[in-house]
Structure formats: structure tokens, C-alpha cells
Amino acid sequence: MIAVALVLLAGGAVAGVLYLSAREQDRLALRHAQDTLTAVLTAQQRAVGKLAMDYSFWNDSIQNLLIAFDPAWADENIGSYLAKSHEIARSLAIAGDNRPIFSMLAGESERQLTPGDFGQGIDTLLRNARQQAPKSQPVPAVGLTRIDGALHAVGVSRLSPEHNTWAPRTPDPAAALILGRKFDTEVLRQIGADYGLRDLGDVASGGGSAFLPLTGPDGESLGGLAWRAAQPGNELWLATWPVVAVTTLAMVGALLLFQRVTRLVIARIAANAAELARSEARLSAVFNQVGDAVLTTDATGRIVTANPATAALFAANGTRLAGRVLDELLLEEMPAEQWLAKRGASEPAARERHCLAQRGNGRRFVADVSVTRLVEGAFNGYVVVVRDIAEQRGAAAMLNTLAAGVLAVDAQRNLLRGNSVGDRLLATAEGISLKDGRIVCWRPQDEVELGRAIDRALAASEPAEHNVAFVQIERPDGKRPLALLVGRLPADPASGGLPAAVLYVRDPDASLSVPPELLIHAFRLSPAESRVVAELVGGKSPQEVAVELELSLNTVRNHLKQAFRKTGTSRQSELVSLVLGTATLLPARPALGT
Image (cartoon, rainbow, N blue to C red; front, side, top):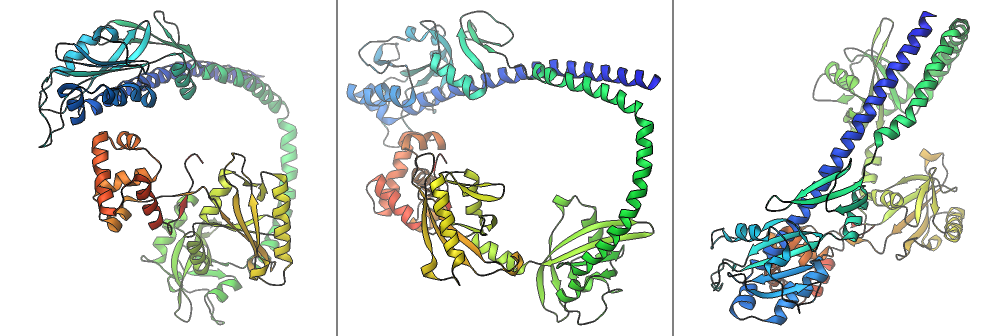
């Protein structure tokens, strides 16, 4: 009875610890959500500020806004374009006396905005942006404001020419550009969906268990954002306390049955002893018949026993292996006693597998070596398994250089082996995938057609060109079908002497990855120009390249002009086509979105 009481007491203690841990987990989850939301808002403010700096630190802006105002240019660059491409709700270019030069609201440039239309705290942001040295690169001032009750991220940057020798002087050093991005219901809903904040919404005031207070540039309260707090700890508690209760009761029952179990264990020990004797006999037979070289050594690396496959692998020609030092067979940089201790003490995943081995005739080869420490009774040594992998390693390396996927299958479409591209296509599960080790198709009719092609290939008397079949595999996302060539491989003794089919798979939507180093050597581009061209080949627009590489749009355009000159092209499409034609021998990568 004392043991039962102790078990019940331990179960109650475990339940208490779980409950306290659940409460702490809920608190940490809320703190993580608040930190995440703070980081998202900070990133939004910085993005608006960087956008303001890109368009204010630009010679074209000085020319078309301050020197010779061009309303069409202003609308195209800081008006409707910013609204459509960067979700800017309102923009305003002002002179040093805060006189409006150009304004945009919801994509329209008809209404004249003033700085006051950007909410409380805009004066502080303007002051911070203007107080920088006139000849320095402008640093945007950013903050949160409320405009007509809605939360906005606002960025202010001084209009300043780029520091080039031909740059015009600004007639108004205090002129500035103000941009505002609105956090409307749809934007907050998307942020909540992206970061797991359920029912994220903007509240002018209030609080609660899931609430992030916000302040403006002047330190004024802007209310905050509220959401339904996740409670992983509470969910864990509800899921685990029944388990604790059932486990406690089970342990009580186990104590009551202890005596009976003890008797059963004694009987089982006797049966195991008999089974052990039979297992030792079977193990001896396997040791002598296994295809890999298996040998045992003492702690110093001297061979104790070796199976027949060891003599065949090392061409012993009848010479006894027992008593020889392992250093004569496996060529390591340190004595056998040291490297056996090192490999035998490592975790299996961390063990070094490959080493150089030497046959009796002096020929060397690459071997896969597995070392296991063996301590049994008075014996203290190692079990060493050796396999010649030179041919296997070379073939695998060659297959992995191909841009097409290569998959070897048996008659039941069980995967025997494949290269890295083929494994990646199976993992994406677009058209074909691996289920219980067997290749399956997304569409049943494609699976029937693939099965017929494999059957025809395996029925052929030998591999030949006229035995190759072409199959198209449809994909569920509407992309172009995968192209498969099905042929026959010769019989492989390693797979029981049965022939296998080989599938060559190509994704027509796969794009080529072009390293900048290739562009430097092929077209004599500068490192900066090669990075810009590589991003354009990857599918980005000049604006996206500017954001990715943290450059101004004007700088990206200048790099692109130099690339046109060096490659003899005049349009972006010609440049991309030329680069892709140069890189056709590179391994393929999945297209964007796959």
C-alpha cells in the first residue's frame, strides 16, 4: 500500500508540474507573438522609409520636382506608380516651407495634400529628416501615425541629388518626400494569417491578454493591435492530463501484478537462453556467407577472425588473415589502435565512412568502412565491415551532374536508386511521387501508361534504342507536363540478377541558376553588374533587384546600361536570352514557386 501511495503522490506532482509548464508556455507564446508583430511593424516602417529615400536621393527627382516641375513624371514615379507597385496610400513632395509640390491620394494626383494630412507627429519626422547635413546621403525618418483613424507607416526623406560630378545642385535643401502606407483590414488580415495571429485588428484604445500598444513619433498613444491569443500550453494541458491520470492508474495496476510478471520473466529467461544458442548457430552461418568483408580485431587492431568475403576482397590467396595487423589492409594516417578507438567511440551518424584500402597485389581502392566496438566477456575489440564502393561512388557522382532526373525501378515500380535531380522531383510530388517506396502518378491514366511503358521495356530481350518509350505526366498545378523516357537497364547481380527499367525525367518549367562568377568571366562584367544581371535572369524586375540588393533604382539602371554595352544587347529580354543560352549545360533547379 505504501508503494501505491507513492505512485499516486508522484502522479499528482507530475500533473502539477505540467499545469505550471502549460501556463508558462502560454506566456512565452504571447511574448513571442508580440515580439513578432513588433518586428513586422518595424520592417514595414523601414520599407516605406527606404522607398522614400530611393525616390528622394535621385537626380531625376531634383530635376523634375524642384528645378523644372514635370507633373507627368511625378505621377509616373511617385504618384500612381507607388500606389500600384508598392501599396503607398498617399505621397507628398513639399518645398522647404512645407508648400506642396505634388501629392497623391489612393493613386489619384488631383487632391492637394499638406503635411498635416499625415497625422500627428509628422512635424517631428520632418524635423528629423531635415536636420541632417545637406551634402550627406539622406537617412529617412520613419514612424507610425493615425490618419483619419487608420494606422499608417510613414517615411520622410530629404530631396537630395546623388553625389555625381554631373549632379545638379538642389535649389531647396529642405525639400522633402513623404510616403504613407495604410494598415487597412486586408493588410492586417494577411499579417495575421502569415504569423498565426488570429483575428488581428486595429483598436484605437484598449488592451487585453493579446494586445500590442503603439506610439507615434512624439510618444503619443496610437492605441494598438489586438488578436486572439494562442494558448499552446492550455492545449497541451488538456491533452496530457488524461494521459498522466491513466499512466498513474496503470502503474498502480503494474505494482499489483508485479509478482506474476516476475514469474513470467523467469520463464522467459530460460526460453531466451535456448533461443540464444540457436541464434549463435545462425549468426555463424551468416558470418561465413555474407557478401561484405566482416572481421573482428582486438583493441590494438590485430585481426582475430575474418569471413571468406574478406579474403576475396583483399585477394589473400589462401594466406591467413588472423594475426595480421589491420594497417596492412586499410591505409589510415594513424595506427590502427588509434583510428579504431576514434571511429568505434563516435555516434553512428558522425562516423567517418570512407578510407583507402589495399589488396594483396598492391592495388588500392576506396572502401566504405563501418567500425563497432565489441565488448563481450573477456573479449575487448571491434567488428569491422568493409565494402568496395569505388565503382558505386563514381557512377553516383556522374549521375548527379545530369540536369535530368534518373530513376531506376523494378517491375513493380519500386525505386531502386536515383540521382539528386530525380530525388528532388519525387520530393516535390508534382506529377510523380514516392509512396511506400513505389513510384506513383498524380493521374490514374498516367500511372497506367507509365506501367505499360515499364512492362514493354522490361519485356525486351536487351536494352536498345527502339525499346525506349516516351510518356508525359500531367501535374496538378497546371504546369507543363513532366517528360519521361523509359528504357531498360541490364541485369544487375546486386539486385538478384533481375533487369530494371530506367526513367529519365525532365521538368520543362525548370529554370537555370546562373552564378554571378559565370557572368564575370563570360562577358567581363563587374561584380556589381553581374549580381544585377543574375537577379534579372532569375525573374526579378529592376525595382525588385533594387530592393533585393539594397541599391537605388537609378543605380540598377546604370548597371544594366553597362551590361547592355558589354554584351552587345539593347533590351532586357535580349540580355536574359543571351545569358540563358550560355548556361544551358548547368544543372537545372526548380522554377520559382515549385
